[in-house]
Amino acid sequence: MIFGTITGAPPEPLAGTTRGIYGANVAMFTFLKSLLRFGSFDEYHIFISAHDPEKAIESWNKLLKPFDEGGRLRLNDLFQLRRFIREKRFTVFHGKHDLGDLAYLRAQLSPDRPFPVTGRIDSISYQFLLPDLLVMMLRGNLYPFDAVICTSSQAMKAYEALLRQAAEDFEGRYGIKLPFPPKLVHIPLGVDADQFAPRDRAEARALLSLPQKGLIILCFGRLSAHEKMDLLPVLRAFKRLTEDHPQQMRDALLLLAGDTQDMDTGRRWRASPGRWGYPSGSKLCEIHPSPKHPSSTQPPISSYPSPTTSRRASG
Image (cartoon, rainbow, N blue to C red; front, side):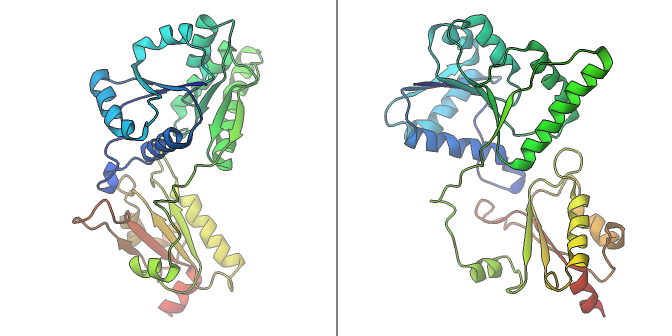
């Protein structure tokens, strides 16, 4: 079996301050390590798209070669992609969420032996992605065995909505119904059990200065209404839970962890908690990484007590 992948520069840095860690890169690197260690295949070709391909290939080689005990890994410049598609009999080729480019090359260079093309969902929150999806459906080079891998059911629903919006807008404007969009498959991200092992709950809460009792709801990610997570619906949902289930949510805590610099959530919330739907007695606690050990500590954390708890504390 021969696998193929298109990727960019290597995921650096994999450790450092929270501003230096890009979650998609960490997930990709972890997956590649596991694939090289446990995967069943004969060759794995990675085609590098970067401003300096030689440097990128050298960096990828340093990262992945220690895990390639069988010598099955092949690192190639992206300019060699057309030749390899003509000459190799790929079992499957993996790329980005827009399958159009790979499907087009397959139709042009390997029409007599089509191979499955798959893609992944990383960043689909940008409106400028709609034209890419439209072109993918317009080309119509997809097969039933092509698929977009969605790492969560919610991401799959969001991607379905984007595809539907692109198709409906085109049909409404030109009266042409587009071919069926690619198949969507839900495959959750794996967990590296060697790195993320279960630990004592009380110890973990103490480490983060969190209360030992009560329900804690974690919201983790890049908190930015512009490009990632719009925080306001999360806060409204948390407030609604406390109102609908006052007993169960009496000591509940909403824990927001991640990069907040774009949105400056803490400053805005402290200035006017009532604007977010919370009483003035609500409290905000922020925990920042230690500058001495940035790679081993947690990202900035803000904790929001439930309105029920806050009213008792302020009363």
